[in-house]
Image 1 (cartoon, rainbow, N blue to C red):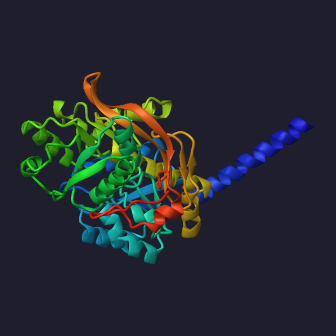
Image 2 (image 1 turned 135 degrees about the horizontal axis):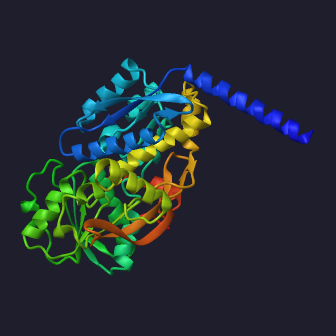
Length: 410
């Protein structure tokens, strides 16, 4: 009798599932507005974002929560004003259910007010602007990657304590992402006894870094280089060509896997940090790396894994809602509650402001198995966007920028 009851219950559940699936199918596709970059200095990152997103959708056979997924792609060209126009078109003309993108921090800041006004959930696969999850948290925003400084707080501690460097010169792209990375690195480096003695800010579209390389202080222990897109390729190549010998410490994107394939010996030995490396040895990452290599003949990096994980966030939330994404309040709530136990960059848990806690690795570029790789030296587990400061103390300080940071009292 018990067996019969259990059989009937399972049959009822199956019928219920099929009914829900049929209802979900009847709702039409889930429309995802995807903002990428296909031209300019950031175009390489945009292409890698598209590859990561496509892999995620393909692995799900184009379905989430029982519904087909339709991606509407917009090219922002890495221009903040155009990003706002594209966001408006996706929401008001194309009637998308959710946005993924944009690529750059200054683009995300440009559409912040519009996202609040439109009340459209948005998942950041790349843009790391600090205040979107800090002093001015956007209630419709959730990030699938770290903030600009999140990976560079532990790097600064590592450089000061374990490498023993005392004097650093910083050179960074002159836009929000570069400013925030540099300031976060400086705050922790100086709190641990070091001193940043020089900061140089080449424009994002700099073609020749020679004049900047010759300005670097020759008495420093190392140079911290924070570049996005393909700028790391140009800087490291010219740094070597000018005969510079001081060690280079890199931001995550300076020697990201997306650009390492275009580099040579100039990148070997560069120590950096990040929440992701293709060299992380976990089953989930091994599977992800093999899939990207098979499909695109390249290692995944910052932009690839960011878009892939943004898609995974969306899939997790849509599955939880059984495909019912019309209720935008419910969708952003589900996105803010995403928990993923295994992913290419480890377990995912999101703080109350929409920012993931992330394992941060210290990496060193080495030539292994015929390719340049970011070999993991050390892992800082579950790093918060606030590093080791109390959130309330961190949030009282000014947002990271070109002219700061200020110390935070412990």
